[in-house]
Image (cartoon, rainbow, N blue to C red):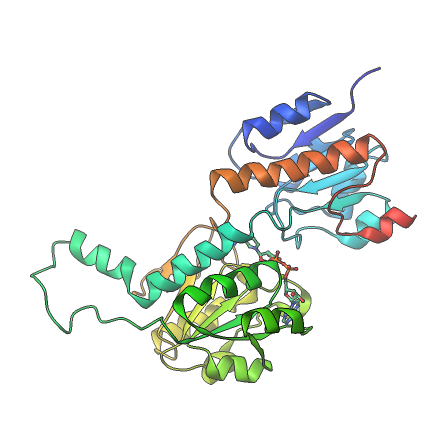
Length: 326
Ligand SMILES: NC(=O)c1ccc[n+]([C@@H]2O[C@H](COP(=O)([O-])OP(=O)(O)OC[C@H]3O[C@@H](n4cnc5c(N)ncnc54)[C@H](O)[C@@H]3O)[C@@H](O)[C@H]2O)c1
């Protein structure tokens, strides 16, 4: 019997590819670039499973191009705003993601940005490299305190909670907003549930960990910046469109807030004009989960999902569970 076929839209760790190859006929896009929508449709044609990235929009058109034998699209990411859930469910296609295994890496990266903005690390590094350093001075590159300051978390899910746990080491006061309260976590961590307004007004550091949904698009825009402290720092390692980037450039330029640390952008890989010229922002290219162990662990979930579904078993992490009842 011929093996079921799997298409992988971009190179993931070799051991994950090898695991897929041990069971299936696997084709991988070896060019290290995102496929165009037309290329994607062409490549997924006739495949039983697709491994997608957050840069691949999995629309009804793409699923139709794949064909009725396609059983699963497995995202190599925890966020799944690139999926058209309704279109997949209507076609009885299972969609999966990689929750949990990237919490530590993403939360550590969040703290890396937070500390770097607070202590002006990127700006100071550039200062030394450009030969401007004349020697030690007491009033030189004074940044912000982190210890015992208030950390605001928007979206206290897996990653938000991990950030809260890491913040304990800095003795930070933790406030959060979410669509649902988690009283067990409040008891464990001392985190305090607040409304969005209070979160904006009281946070010294505001970090975003909501998924990208219609309700969270531009969760932070001009009105929100106006409510924040002038000394506040905004960190975004969720999804770019959660922050209105035009409003952010304006807020940073006008010093409505102290600074920002960004892992994600509204129109990746394009950066909003004006952002790069500012010193009070740190810009990194969507690398929050980029550690070796994390990337392999993400791939292990992808492999388990595809193996289970193509062998007639339940997926490990389904994001459109209603499809399992059809
Ligand atoms: N930068 C990166 O490389 C990277 C890496 C991992 C995850 N992410 C992003 O981080 C997001 C969070 O990941 P997670 O695993 O913690 O997800 P999660 O589902 O565990 O947590 C999300 C939390 O946000 C809350 N939420 C949803 N809508 C909200 C709203 N309108 N207001 C307030 N809270 C709301 C949910 O109730 C949930 O508690 C992902 O969706 C993904 O987009 C980015």
